[in-house]
Length: 289
Image (cartoon, rainbow, N blue to C red):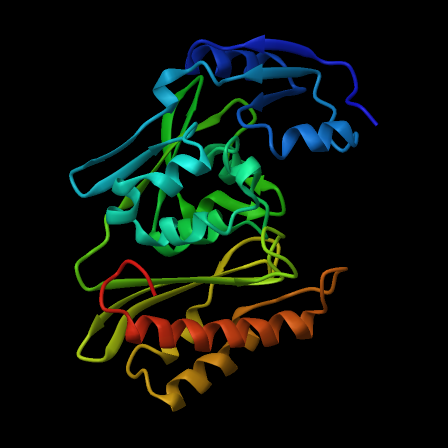
């Protein structure tokens, strides 16, 4: 099957793209196209207008200033994977991006497109929750900043208005004592995860604190497991890990689907939690497990 008929325009600025979005109810933005174009070919998406934003240079670039790593919406996955700045300032993203799909998709897919698509099984939205990222949106009324916890609102749903576009994401740079872990379980490398976990924690004297556990592929959006994190706040021993695993029954609300049952996803989430805590405790630096 092929896509239904559509009009194509190439925007030269954010203002131009947002103006076209505002005046065309059926418009969609085209960046890497790795999710949109397959959906169009299967007639799951039928936009009347495609707005190509790949010529907007202000949407590119990776830079650090005032303790914040800013990543433009058009930065491709492969650029994140190869960036020394990302590896230094946001090690969790460097770990996670290697799990995103396959090289052919990483060569074209963009961070902005990934986050705006808001697939609950995607790796990067969970990382944004854990890192306390801020999404920068632009529209006819100007720019606004949206916390990651408010940005993801359901399956393929975000806080973006119909005439807004994501132009960048800002992430606080990693602290010296901060450690990260990223794990997922999938049927094959490159497949969407059946369950996944992005973690951040401060590590001092063999004890973890300020633990953030961002689960994905276990609900309609990425979720921070607050009960499990609280169980690990005062101790990181075996009893605390078991308590955290038990707390996941209240923190998560997985559903049955063709990939696996809710019970399977909860079990795998507990496996990932135990492995991640072990990784966080044995890392020498915040970079790699």
